[in-house]
Length: 401
Ligand SMILES: Cc1ncc(COP(=O)(O)O)c(C=O)c1O
Image 1 (cartoon, protein in one colour):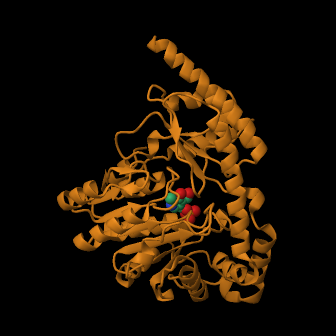
Image 2 (image 1 turned 90 degrees about the vertical axis):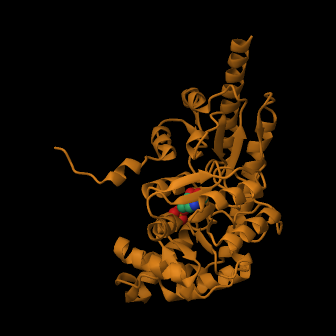
């Protein structure tokens, strides 16, 4: 049977990360591949109580609901964003989405025509690239270093290519684990204002900071609700299975996204939304987030200690100040996609860096997740990985000689 698929399916790509996860989910492989939070830290009792309360105390939790999302939850989000991120917005400017992934999708649906230019970092969040390419956009990378996008290249590309949007993960990024400096944030915003370009700030990891008070402010907090759309999620701080995220920004954009959401799924799961309302009321979420921060920080330090012992010429990494990932540059002679196969044979997995690139992939990069394995497993997995890395380095030296 020949199905008459739309032209658009040509732009649907399978996620390399998800494909790798399928391979490593069996056997004794210690995986640093996924972007998964630690199940051991899930607040199971609090979530279970919150769902029970949601179902039993209010039949609206079982009914069709408003596309915008449960108003009480939007009020709580407006309060939390104000207190914690200095983002001052009205509940009416918030749309509750099925994870921030849906926020990226709905935003793209209302913004992009085929061929529109989106500027991103290189590398960047793979599943955002999947969304952008499904809408047939032209994704163009901006040069960046560990402090964020380089201002000159950004301005040059804005002038020449007239992008519809700049997509960024400026705080503890996925995959790079980096945090943009305040100066680069200001520069990006100045250019967005000057050339009237919308910025999509994707911030799923901002709460997972390892040291107090040194995270630069969000872009949204520095904007007068004109250019910045800010999306975040409860996936990393409560549980991903609830599938609750949100996006906040200029009312015109949120209104159109709400219409797009009507067509997509009518509204986000009402039981989960009401459960979150109760969870935020009854449970000390901030204390829980502190436990997550401390635990992940310790795990990152274990991974870093083992990496520091590697001693391979030409290998480098940036120590993350938060989030869930460590990004490693191996010597250029090492192809990490090839290395992955050997690593899996030795019982450890990671994600090669190449799929995160928009173009010119650096084949010698890799992303390691440090949140999903316990310190003991990180230790064991890193011992396996380090021995695979060293062997690969020796082999590449031998070839060179
Ligand atoms: C940068 C980034 N944005 C968005 C998401 C999607 O999160 P959610 O579970 O809220 O859909 C992720 C998930 O890993 C992410 O890393």
